[in-house]
Image (cartoon, one colour):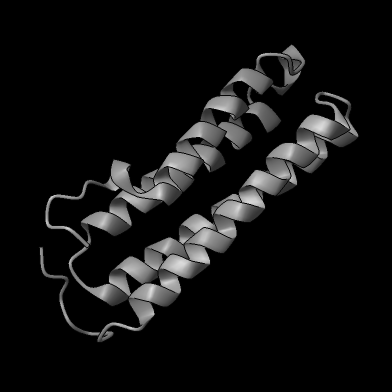
Amino acid sequence: MSHSMKFSDLEIWKIGFKSLSEIYALIKNFPKFEQFALASQSIRSANSIIANIAEAHGRYFFNDKIRILYIARAEAEEVQSHLMVACSQEYISKEIANQLIERYEVLIKKINSYISYLSQKRPDSPINR
């Protein structure tokens, strides 16, 4: 990786950010009583993905990066669950839910690939920047 690469240059961050923007747009249509429940949980989980990707980028050791990327991956799974619930309650259409769930599935696979890439490095050596 380039010494000048920023977390926002990472493809996984860009996918997560675009998906978060779509989640924000979707929750505007949720019922008011969901504002502090499913809507809030969905935003927190989706935002946590990109925050953890950014944090992992800033970590010095490969093992730290990988550990935090596992958290980002888990948050992506959580967002998928929230989307399924929103769909089951008819807050969003099945088509929109499936599109976003698939996008998060792609993101999970790309995070896995990044974890694999980092795992091939010496696990306890620092990242050279």
